[in-house]
Image 1 (cartoon, rainbow, N blue to C red):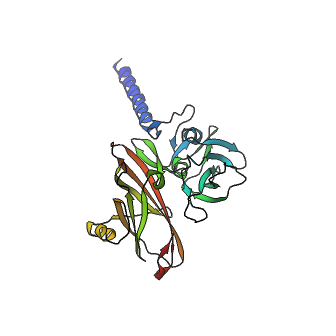
Image 2: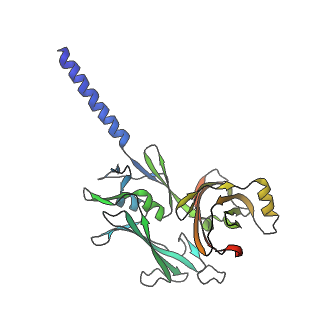
Image 3: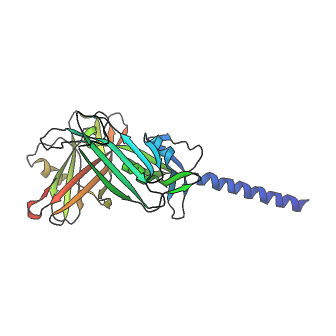
Length: 301
């Protein structure tokens, strides 16, 4: 009898251990603090140690329209109006903002480690029409693992879909954490280049004195998607900037990155950050900066 009790105890311990491992291995996803509920599929880690997410549930939780095309693959789109567009710009360079990002699309090709990103810009006074954007572009997103179909569900790394639609992606306690990033423009932050040397470049974040933003923390700085190491401006450097005669606003953050520039070359920088508001709340934001470097003549946006 004791022998059977010992065997039964070992079996029970093994089952409890397996249950604990499964519980620990469950991967969650939250978007702006809200948990994504996966009803008939669940995230998992693939053979490349990459976390794959059922894209339909995650995409719909991000407010995206999700479609499937046997020829193209999994299609994620979002349309915007002038009022809710994430980005605006001065398309004809006349000093007046007159265009907005009206449509974005990301397509995952099954079995391939790439996705296609497409954007369309529209005139301020027009409605989005997929056939008549006034400006647009298509780019390729290279991934470190492929999108797959498993149990009739489409899986791919969450990071690539999320970052394409301006979410900051983090990882906390076995959970993929997404936070939507708002542009500098919409946050009321000015982002200015204050230095453009051959071996280093510097920028400044400022706001109006009446702004609700109290502080800014840089999360990362990238150049063409590759991480750079920002160094915050010293007090002496801040003083030099403000004594230059430029009409800057309230200082939030200034930084410099070391990067060797090449003549007659385009560069695309992106800064991701958080801001702390007067009420203590936190928001995520981003700033893009495009630079054309012309050696002794400096850089041009």
